[in-house]
Image (cartoon, rainbow over all chains, first blue to last red; front, side, top):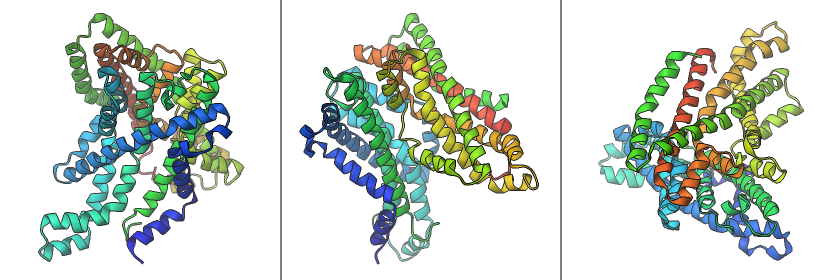
Length: 239
Length: 235
């Protein structure tokens, strides 16, 4: 059995993780569901979710790339301490306010939220990379004459991939909150954030409640998948 | 509370605050914006501190009593709290409460109470679980109620208060959304309102106020933990 199949089995052994993945799939492709057969308020909320969720996924991807890079560099420079200092700064709020302030579009929002969630990824990514760097097979590869670049690409990253994916997934929930807040700032009636604030013209209260319910469901699903990924991504031999 | 730890935390946050205030001044914030932000920060402190402290203490006390009493139906409730902690941002109860007609400061308090209770339940049960050996040792031969009251409850409560700092820091965005929904004139709502008007000076002043609120709460919770959290007890 390959390490990947082991990881998939460990993920599948957690019903919450699998259910979370299914729920996220349904939410992400909500537009394909039979919306006309749903109550109007719920259909309005379900239709608003995919755009917000895809923006949050993009922002989390940016945050993951930046966070993993940050966590990797911090092995040599001790830059994780900066993350702790940034902890007192409301980065997500600042990121959500930037597009509204400068009148920018989705790309700036993705970049700003990605930057804001990068510290969330940097700390666990740093821990995951440090754990792999200390392992015997890395020392063996170095002793065998592999270049540092080859060790990074062919030994460290593949072995740290599971924990790094789990670390990146942790950025999704804050990214979703950040994107929703940015939508609140813009006060757009058809977005998820706009619906939460009751900006939908007709049936605003019911749409707002439906949007709140979907937010709870989405966050619970994200957390369920995060627990599954944490279990799946555990480095072999680790307890 | 240990005043030394609290002062140290406040001093550690001060360079960040000074930097933010300089940014606010450079962005053109005048006396009126600074005053508005200061009042907003105090309102936010008033919105956050009571429900978080009451909710987390209540949750932690409930968790410690349930766990010390042994497995029961309420124990399943604790497991549920562990699952939904983090999936219930205060904006969700806020929407529900707003639909029911609650708004203003009381509405915001009630909105923050539910996630604080859930977090207190989880944090408290985690503290008791990790201190199981310690509690068993001190409780040998004692009555369960006495163990819960004298040891488990304070342990869970202090750990819950200590754990509240990231809850507060991470959820500044949620605080702003709740203040906006409930029409509370706090620093978060001030930031959103100013961003909608493109007023960067007021946004910078409002962010400084929020950072100050987080720094004060962080200093208080760190001081509480330093004074009352048992050392070497496995907690």
